[in-house]
Amino acid sequence: MDIAAIRVFIFDVNGVLILSNVGNAQALAESFSDDPAIRERIIALYWTLGGIDRGSKIRTVQERIIGRPFREGEFEQRWERFRKLSSNSMRTAPLGRGCREVLSRLKELGKVRAALSNTPPAQLDEVLKARNLERCFEIVRGGGDWPKSESLARLLAETGFQPGECLFLADGRGDLAAARQSGVPFIGINDIGGEFDGAQDVIGPYPDLGAWGEENLGLKLGD
Image 1: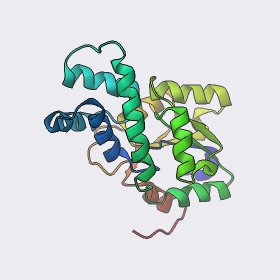
Image 2: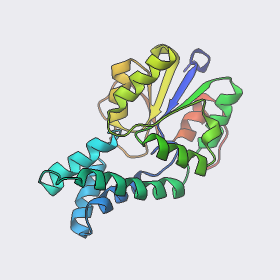
Image 3: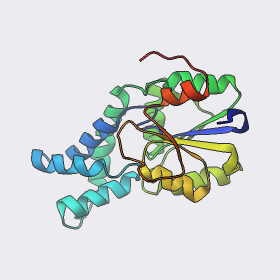
Image 4: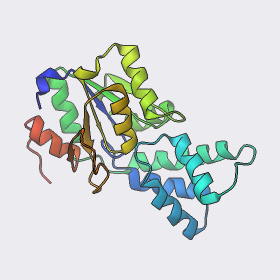
């Protein structure tokens, strides 16, 4: 990979920079039910929804697990409950291996670093500040109740970045779909086998961000 040819590095947050997917899966389950069996079903479903926006996750659980339409105000209650629980997960989960080192090296190289997440903007800002990551990005874009494909397209339109000068580093199939739609090269960062099986346009995948940094940025990291 010719890093010199890339000007903009776009990072997914959950699962790449912050290893909060396990906690977020539990948070989604807890936001719906106290029943352990139902929670286990929701957690299992969560792992099939990589890179999918928060609103769609909540609606999918309601349809497939709860099996009835939302009552008045119920969607908003689930959203707020998940927001609170996932904030705790993102504040306490470990950072991805190589997170700070990769971001620091890209700064040294004069690259633009962007965080692009399905986490709502205010919550994302709070989490990045809590993890001392807010200064590691020139651009931060949150999401929520719209697809990652829309978030990525908006980012390109607002900044004027060309797809070929960008890389998107992310861990889910929804992220890959967004990269495909905008024509941005995609780096798969995922330690869960099979997430990108059959995809011919994924670079990697790498087990973690550090492995990508070691291969492409000359970083020397420990385990």
